[in-house]
Image 1 (cartoon, rainbow, N blue to C red):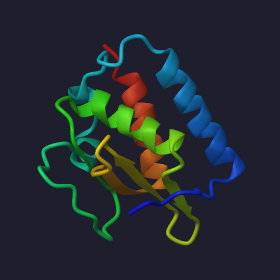
Image 2 (cartoon, rainbow, N blue to C red):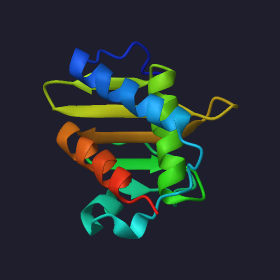
Image 3 (cartoon, rainbow, N blue to C red):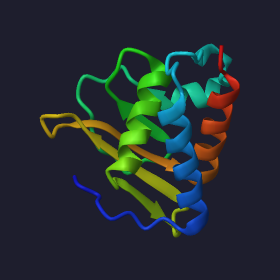
Amino acid sequence: MKTQKSKLDNKELQFFYDFLYQYETDVNHKGYNSRYLSKDLRKILNNKQKVIKKSKETNFILYKGKTVIADFLKHVRNSFAHCNIQSSSQKNSFLLYDEDNSRKCSMYGNINKAVFYNLINEINKARK
């Protein structure tokens, strides 16, 4: 599924630009510890899937990777950089998508905007 041409409002664009800038200028992408995230937020991040399946559920993110936070951040970065984020004002959620080099889905998520912002803020606080 190619989401292309995300329709993010100005506030959302600013948030993702700030996120992208922080990601690109951070030299230690592995400097995070998921144990410092709340149990509810840890449940949202799932990097144990062999196959990424799309779902209409909300507040889940499935992705491939060995580390919980570093790989998640990489996929969110790619999702924004490649215009693979959709913003739904009706559902108040983001649909995130990323592909690997062979064009196979490597991350798929549907998450409430407030939960997503909280997740990113908690990740930033979880630095080692």
